[in-house]
Length: 494
Image 1 (spheres, rainbow, N blue to C red):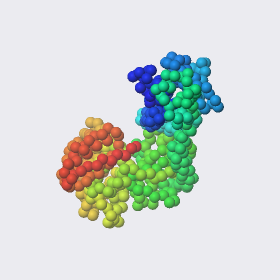
Image 2 (cartoon, rainbow, N blue to C red; image 1 turned 120 degrees about the horizontal axis):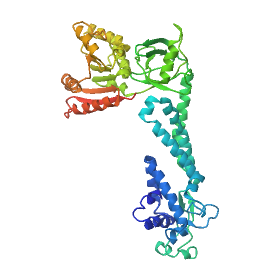
Image 3 (cartoon, rainbow, N blue to C red; image 1 turned 90 degrees about the horizontal axis):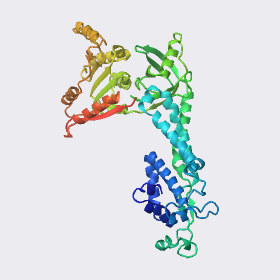
């Protein structure tokens, strides 16, 4: 019925006949109803507007504002509260009263408000600046699904129950007074369909409950601190140990600190390698939760264990596929370097153990930072890798370039004075720090020249703007010849 009401602009008289004349004979309305149900999930706004139009049409039909047929169908006698077609049953019932006094109307308002709150709180500006607002508001999905299950209990959508006799549609629509008197025109009877939404909701809800139980089990498992380090630029490194914990490169975990909030779980990419006997995360101070955690750690006495920590995970990401490519381009921006720290550590262990399964033969690593202190997060790891590769005669395996994007004139002058030093004045590495932003056309051209027949996996953990640039470059520099260089873009969301 909703689908037909949406076409009222063509002809009000014809559309009301479609609804009230065709519905009694059953066969015509089944397809439009199913079409409306499927489309309503993709456009709740259209669904709501259509229902409001329906209510208005119901009201006007009851008061005879269209034609005798629609009025007769609206005022069919109701025996046992099952045979009526129009849900408006009296002259005192207004559209507003119908919306706010029926099961379908009240639940519709509730689930609409819940959906609006969830959508608005999911905007990136809210998630970034007010994560708690997004986190708690998003749990209104429980109210949404509960209302959705109850929504059909009012059985507003109705179908004819005595549609089997061979109706003479042409005759009956013009002879309302003969309904029930002639065999070809029995009085049409209607009933609401049995609510079926629960069949679509119960599966996801069972999975959700199982996931909550699994998270609770993981939460109560003991987690010990192996090491706590406060890095420059308010970056906290936690090295944790948990029995039975297994991870892969680039994966992430959810952390919960009851001392801050028992309900909040925050995702953090692990910076440790699978070969290590612990897992580590680097936490930057960017919000209330992270600031409180860092404050708690700063107040701990030396050598003390940190606050109780619940760990849920690990969970997979696109970075897990990095070793499936012969050549990999790793691009990290700021704290977005964390998944690549795990990859670089794992590479170091694989070379150290002479792992024969290592398929990757070349890695290009780009790290973009706004300030010099950020390079200290794991510059020591790059120094170890740099030295290890040279000792093994594989200095060409890892090409890394560090970019300081937030530099000023004082930085530039200092670098120019020490330009002839063996190591970089910022990082202490042999690879000198670049100032400004990368020329991505130049970088991609270099990769193509050095790897003319390879499949290159490009991995990014950084902002959307940079993702747009790199995805376009991957398309631009992918050769149509299958025997030449191809780029595949993978992005981490953080």
